[in-house]
Amino acid sequence: MNVIAKPNDIAGLIEADRAHVWHHLSQHKPYETIDPRIMIEGRGMRLWDATGKEYLDAVSGGVWTVNVGYGRESIANAVRDQLVKLNYFAGSAGSEPGARFAQKLIEKMPGLTRVYYSNSGSEANEKVFKMVRQLSAQVHGGKKSKILYRERDYHGTTLGVLAACGQPQRASHYGPFPEGFVEVPHCLEYRNQYPDAPHYGIAAANAIEEVILREGPDTIGLLCLEPVTAGGGVIAPPEGYWPRVQEICAKYDILLHIDEVVCGLGRTGTWFGYQQYGVKPDFVTMAKGLASGYAAISCTVTTEAVFEMFKNDPSDPLNYFRDISTFGGCLAGPAAALENMRIIEDEDLLGNTTRMGERLRANLLALQEKHAAIGDVRGVGLFQGAELVADRTTKEPLAEAKVQAVVAHCMKNGVIIGATNRSLPGLNNTLCLSPALIATADDIDAITNAIDAALTEVMG
Ligand code: PLP
Image (tube, rainbow, N blue to C red; front, side, top):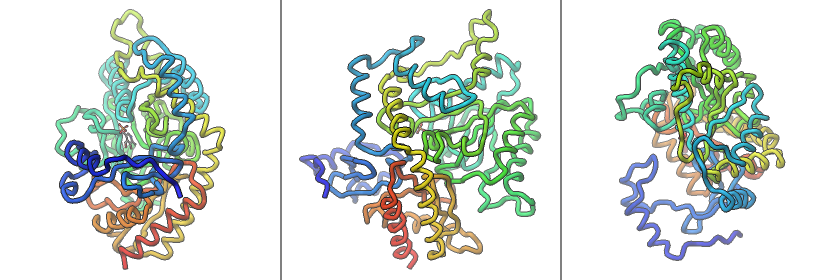
């Protein structure tokens, strides 16, 4: 039995939270009648709330972040040591952890050479969009300024990246947005938009080409995609999709940006999700698992060719990337990220992710045999989803209330799972599972046993 340090005034803590904290992604109303859940402590795969209740975390901190698990003293120590040595310096100077981490990261990303630091996934993505807009002005005479994004993908919360949001309710009410963002169709074979096509993956990639031809290839500078769509439904790309996408980008001279904010740093069993598919990106962005939530850090990584385009005319005073992120100068970030990477490597967490991902998938497929509500099981590594349906033949999505009841039942039994966020009208019906990369076979079985019990209870 674990003993955690409970706060001494739980009622006061809950009251302070209820009175003053505006919770992320939450309706306010329920907090008038229920107590907010306040997480106090974490170790490994487990968390404890203010009341002492223990949870097994199957979503790595709620949003796929704590890749190496809770309570890592070596990361805390690395951050502490760096902070007392030098906490911060920004602008044009480099730093010791910044240089060392960039070098280590680049070793894992053949073909890419340059790392730009900032501190959230949204910001890392927005840097790419700004670079593309600057290249349009500086190199392409105003052409190639449009940015393609995919239906059901998400790239962040600021207005710039919300303009590239494939999840309608996330963007709804926040416009007007910057211009020049164009959506391409999703690639979820379970909800096949091209039933007559002989090969789904090729058809889904060809749909991107159709958009490019419609808009005019010389207007488009960037295609931005998640390697495996996360909050949009855990969509692993269909076979044949990525090679064709790569071909299309090369054909029309369009830069390829892979948003690895969720999949980066091991989630799929390779360092990056795109490496599962042999893709050669021009930009890669990462955040969440980069330092496993021990510090705020994100990176925009690109090629020497892109970097070179920002110094192609020394006589032009505006042709460098005129951007800064104040807290891109916080040195806790690269210090934590360096130790995070060491842990992933030394503990073979990529191997564990592959092995445990296979177990998670096998367990979910076994549950699919038992529960008619599971229409589809999909994902890569320790990032798996189970799409719930009311009817397997018609694939009618299970009602949101029932999906939430499954999540709530697991939570009541001490297992935290996730579901597609509520930004996909009618399609908020996929359970999302992304345990830390340290998960054991027992943890995986406990997660799927909780889902089994919840489906039995909720579906009768
Ligand atoms: N990109 C993807 C794929 C994400 O899932 C998210 C957040 O969930 C972001 C970008 C935005 O990251 P952040 O919340 O750190 O700004």
